[in-house]
Length: 458
Ligand code: PLP
Image (cartoon, rainbow, N blue to C red; front, side, top):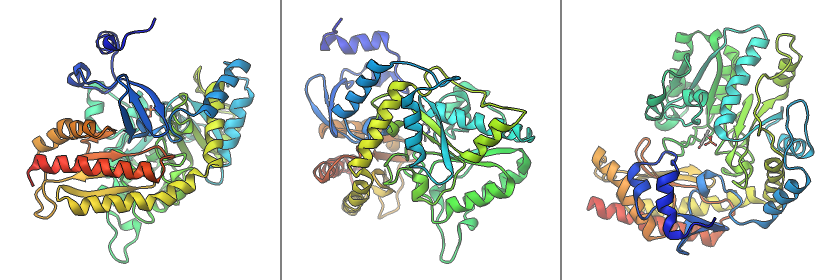
């Protein structure tokens, strides 16, 4: 049955429960219905063309409408649509895991596949607990994460998420989870080392309060998304590693956004000198052509768990984990990413984005600053940067819910207005966006920022 475009919105309202969407947005006659994609652009049901400023949801790294990835998926469906990773395997999961093991930081060579970022985080938490139990350290059950971090929506991943309004409707969540300040307000003074950062001092305080031998793992993103593309200060991840080694807990890098080129490396951990025990990934691993995710784990930890008489296996799994079609899509996607030199492209074009954002900041007093790296940025707004006037809560709500969405619509830009930690515009274009597309993006951002300035009357 084909639904006429006129009926689509009405039937969506009737039959489809949206994710994280306010009623007013869902009821709006202007609700976008996206029907087709091509490179860095998508088209709605009226044929209107938009620039995809968020890579779907931080995932369409290799761009829309690629026939090579589609062909790989179709060939795999024809050959073997489904087999499991429970007491068996199949070639495409093995090929995907082998490929990924060659891309990650040294020593991390074993992947456990799942179907989403939340499941990846869930699996990393469960692996950490079972690993410690298998080593006779059953007391290590607690997790420490960062304020305002988003780690997903399943109950474990939600527990380590640091955004209260997402968690409040669902308590009680996992006990023994604490949060320490993210790097948002951290700056290194002259001659100071990361160990002196207030955020890491606060982490040490939490460890002392909880008891070092009760901590299973610390989890953080290389660049934290919620709070606005928070790039870590120099030496931050090396210091996190030292702390984890000192207290004997695992270090998890949640790379659901930062893996597979977003910050110009296969993994953000590489860019920031992180040496995690576990990396979680999803999104860009398939560029959105199929749902997938995984947990890349240090080989020694896997061996210890599997060899332990207490455990003997990772007692966790899902029907879709390591799905043949998603695995084949992963291989095609990562192969294209490598063959087309996408990591170099991101690093080469990074200065163009940063120059453009700096210019926009200079032109507009309502821009507090931009932050980010690679193809991962936010523009943060303020009342007036020159006078130091901050936005009121009402202005923040109006900017993120009304001014930005309306201005983006006018210039055919699809991306996110974020109010987690300020009023922000998130910019995460597909990694295949060339110079012309990035210039188009910057022009659109200039127009959108002008709309905010006009609203504020400054
Ligand atoms: N972790 C991070 C850092 C994320 O950004 C997200 C989603 O945006 C998740 C986990 C959850 O991923 P998913 O939505 O695929 O469950």
